[in-house]
Length: 385
Image (cartoon, rainbow, N blue to C red; front, top):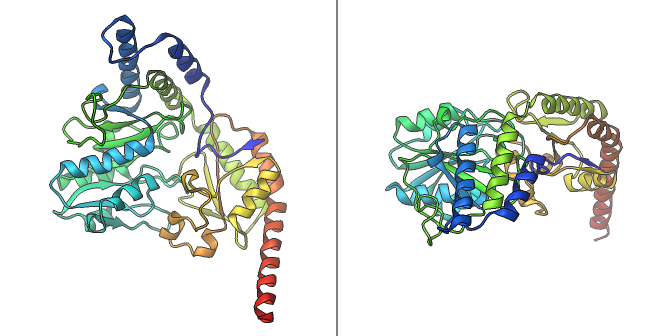
């Protein structure tokens, strides 16, 4: 099996498995005052320090959550509610955890930042959109579908000049490209475990101490009274181990494999279109449009050959509609429906790339023939009517 869907979930790193396994059998409730509780609390605080050190943050800025979706919702809603401003600015290519959160606030509360043909928010677009009504800007560090990396530091500087905090969803970036919270200038940053070799169900929001954030959950007052609830100590320990290992990993190997994959696809399917920035993109991401194909059909044909990939975000898998990211980039709906994302990670091999290179040409040809046959059947049916 060639697993080319690391952007959806990457297999757990051995370091994370080992740390989590030990914690499962030895640690108690981190809010308890007895010996087991204090031991658990110490493990949590050490994990907090490790994550902060790896990402250029202060330990007090690390707030543990149940994952990326919760962190995004906490940042968007919490910061918005804590500020006396009526609007949020969000890019049109955000993950649905952000898109749906800002839309939930109400139509009048949202201003949209358009992207260029590569899927990037430019500083000029943000400068033109900012005014005194804006209380929060949210722009993802790197796009989860096409892999384009945004100029977060420049965007954060522009927002800061107007006194507006910037939140960035860095779920795809952490562990793949250098991320330094302090240097980025962002006020809040989202990351999650299962995208970088850690466990499911654990994430974090890096939140500047001077940024007010209203809680979504109320209870025991854990995590600066921003995220109440019993801390998932084993997951936190495994998460921290994965962050440490992933940021120390050299992305050059994955980048080289990605370049081989792009070359193999283009050789087998010369008219395939690489979406996103061809250079300034995530090292493991290759997102293609295959003219004349339906992405879902092509995905299943590849799956039958033992190659696993994606039509886009796993969080919207199964929804028969073109990617909102591609549409925002100006791609026509028919072309957007014929796209696949191949994403590599720490378990990827040259054999995975070779398998795709061998299978993609015949799969595209078969998908195109199936599409032509379907059009002929529908045309014949209309004639008989």
